[in-house]
Length: 283
Ligand code: GLU
Image (cartoon, rainbow, N blue to C red; front, side):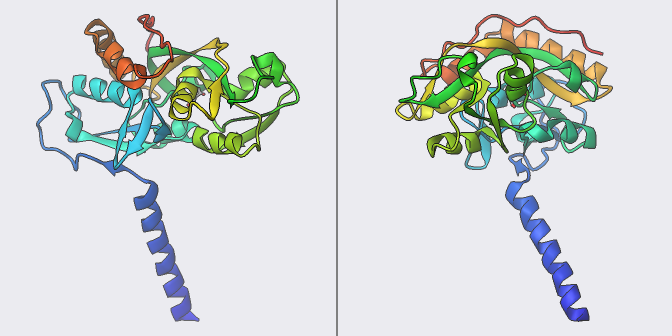
């Protein structure tokens, strides 16, 4: 009995250790010593939450994420004094971005994270570094859905913790039947097997998925709304927010933002936004 209990505790510990390894940090740096590139870093490493399942934005390739958000994060970290080797990547999902910042799991979130008043109650935002719009993805042979108004009575997938579905159902008053998934790649699976009729979220995210499977999915290409991508910071980070805003300004001025967008979407037919976003106040 006693032995059984101990071994089950040990088993639990081992399972937890495995879980932490399996879905935890993809540490590409291992805690560099110094070696920053000139800025005034605040420690040996910086931990940044990005998506791992969104092609073009944050997608895990091997044990390193790649994409526009990852490039933005790397640029900003560089300006804060952290070399790429000093970045610890952490997978962020739409639903855990606030809690990651509140609990100190990450120092920053750069994960298609829209600035909203509600989120500003619990976290700070620098930026925006990019302004996306919302759109809809359907099966390539679906010719019925051309805009949000066609979603009435349709089964609609979005990721839990995102604003996308609320924008349609609550703000636009369209009575779509909601199906929440853990992330957008799960929504894509549900769209692929016919469980849902459409997926809605930012056009950047949908464009990345559509480009991967152009024969299977079609982005409706009828964008609406405005999704201002912020750099999520723990509440009370006014000074760091100012530093991040300076980095964002420079990233656009130097052409690094446009270059990162080109890298992410240049080979697709997605017409990404090239206008420099207007920064919001920190505080
Ligand atoms: N940008 C939107 C949001 O932050 C949708 C995309 C996402 O969930 O990452 O809610």
